[in-house]
Amino acid sequence: MNKADAIAPAVSPLDDTQRIRLIFCLIGAFVMATVLTAFAGATLQDPDSWWHVKVGLDILANRTVPVADTYSYTFAGQPWIAKEWLGQVLLALAYSAGGWNGVAALIIGTICLAVFLLGWFLSGHLKPILAVAVAFAAAFLISPIFTARPHVFTLPIIVVWTAMLFRAVQDEKAPPFWLLGLVVLWANLHATFTLSYIIAAFAGLDLLARTGLSKPALLGKWVAFGLLCPLVSLLNPYGVKAILATLTVAYGNEAVPLILEWRPFNAQEELLQGAVMLLGLFGLLTSRLRIGWAKALFVVFTLHVYLSHLRFVYLFFLLVPLVLAVEVARQYPALSTGAWLTEKRDGLERFFAGRFYALCGAAAVLLITAVSILGSAYQVAPSPTTSASGALAYARDHHLSGNVMNSYNFGGTLIFHDIKTYIDGRTDQLFLGGFTKADEATGHSDGKPLLEAQLKKYAIGWALLTADDTRIPFFTELGWKRAYADDYAVIYLPGA
Image 1 (cartoon, rainbow, N blue to C red):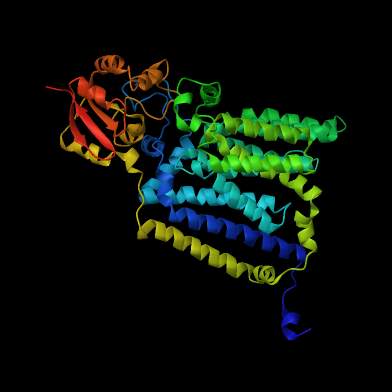
Image 2: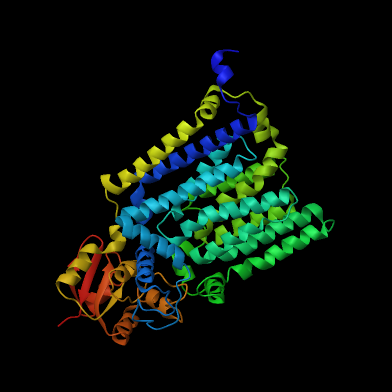
């Protein structure tokens, strides 16, 4: 033993492996941050980002949450709740601190946290390098939902929730009751908090499949936990209304078939995701992997929800690996963390373990640098296809007034600029009762009479339309004059 070895602090193998796992997961998160920062503007492409930020700003200014619509003239005064109020406040705080760069940085940071957590939980069963690779692949597959909207804040929560519940089942223990705090947070961040009930139910079924009725006391704790989930989710400004609001979409409404993210999976458009699902199915059919009926039901559920609505892509690609990792590790030991622990640490892993604090410090510096670059080196902004910045500047300079008929994708920017909308992205609660269907029908080949009726009914003073809006020819035929046009937006005014 040399002198350096004699004075070196003793580090247990467990500490060593935990450090290596942590470094691998941090590297995965940092790579994800680098990629997302390079394409930061892509997080601001959704038209709803505008109104989510605006609602958050208004909540901060008014110190209260809305209970009725004040953003449209077509449904003004109708009951409407900001059921994602906390997520909207977070977006507003980021916007207040750093503009749209701040919003993008917050979204990127949240996504990277989800990737880190996914890698960490997976590496509890699978070799770290494999776990991080799976986490990165999952994030890539769900990247279409990486937008500046409150649902992103639930990604780390749903990873922790699912991993901890199924870990408790694996250990045949009671669910950690501290997880109920995540339900409270989730219920204030986004309407998908009701998924927590369903995931908990599947975990309970997995426990039942393992133990049967042999442990009634343990089953009783799980039942109590399941009953507490909806109870604690009432701890939000709207109480039961937040739960009821989710049913509007869960059971379908007239807007669901018309909005892209609510449409079913299309194999011709989602080629990569489709190929991965087919490969996964092929692997399950040709391998000897056995997962049990409860987990099989969970896989079927997440797949069904994704195939029904594109926006739930994350349920399948994030959660299925979490739930199946332990089965893969058990039935294919060569891929497991246990096998990795028996291997001799290679040079890279020894480097990670021996310089853990230095590497963590370097990662922190790099992260701060990345945030600084995002904040100062270049500016990101919402897509011009949703901002209508030139058209709105024209409207402001020419003092356009009266009710505006807007294309759906411009609803968010109108709300942000304090212009009351004809229609916008809040179709989970508003613009129903035939309104959304009528708006969509005005763009059909026979929609001119209906458009004319809508213009009269709502006393439209001007129209702000996307450049490809199918109603544009009808405005010309009805005698309206094109007052402004660019590559993204056009404005029509009534004829003299």
